[in-house]
Image (cartoon, rainbow, N blue to C red; front, side, top):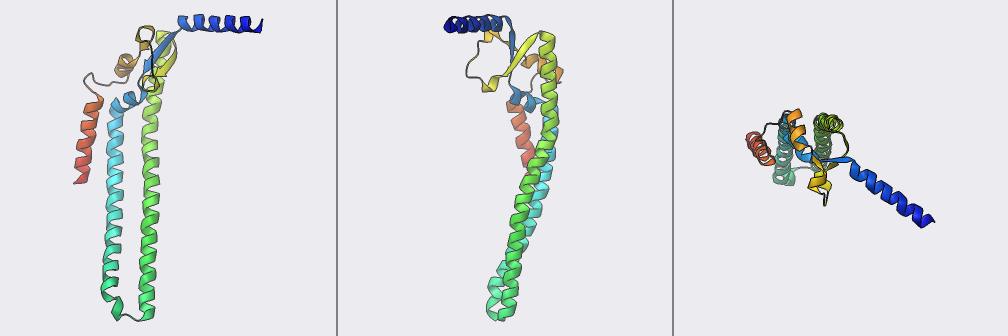
Length: 186
């Protein structure tokens, strides 16, 4: 009896699921294509460059002091040598702390800038799904298989709703990011 009830319940679920509309969207691609994404990337690149420049200045100062120490240590008294060693150790510690803190701050900044983009995309997906009578939206990039005939591709609708230009692709965004990296590398 339990087996019959279980089979009946599964059949009912399968029948009701097939009557429901399921939408798909590539969420990461959508977020990457949004115009706001490049604005965030510009800010992240600027912050990253500034942080990298500061780190490089600190590293250069450390290296100069290390070179001076190596060249002059034989002429110093034990107390001077000890003080210089402590100064180098302190500088090296500050470099390591700066690097760790800077990395975390950069991650935090990236999350801060990308969160509103992600929320805007999710809100647009929800709004369009409701308007289309879609009860479930799945991320196409996470699916191993889906039947295209029995799903609704929301990407074109969401792209339009978010103001993503027709010709904008992941390749064009990658080209923009590469150009941005070159700009901040110089």
